Length: 186
Image 1 (cartoon, rainbow, N blue to C red):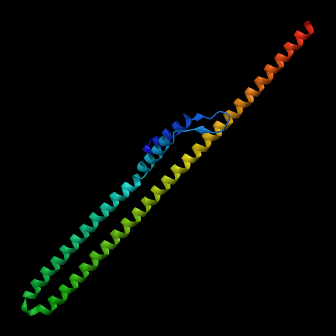
Image 2 (tube, rainbow, N blue to C red):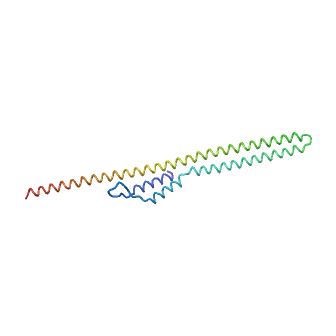
Image 3 (cartoon, rainbow, N blue to C red):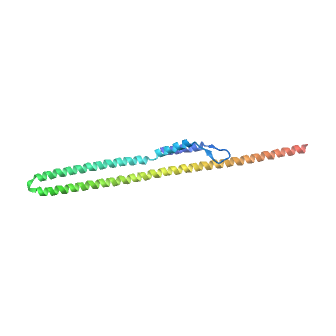
């Protein structure tokens, strides 16, 4: 059972404990308790937001790793280029190859970074959507429960009103019968 479910049960308890207002269909509830529970629901609901943050942190770690790898590839390419330049007879060829290696390394690094960013953004978007859906669902359920509680209270008060009316009618009928017997006995 999640924290949100527990808080929703607490909200139901507050509504169940509401004091009925005589002669009306309304009930008195502790507004501060309800507001506190709703705030706790808001604070506890977005677990997916925490997961999304972890994903973003993971994405940043992946990006840092990709940049590090790209830097290592570039450093290695530059070292190779320096070595080739040192050889007099193939200097021009070495310079061309070094430039090509550096360009390819940069392109691969950039592609890896773009893919990582895209993937992390998609995961974050999905997590945010799920968190929003959960909050909306919790709010809708809360409204449904409040409506059900109000309807129950209204039905109960109407039933009590009917019972009192019938009991009063019975008492009047019995009194009338007693008065009629008294009058006929005199």
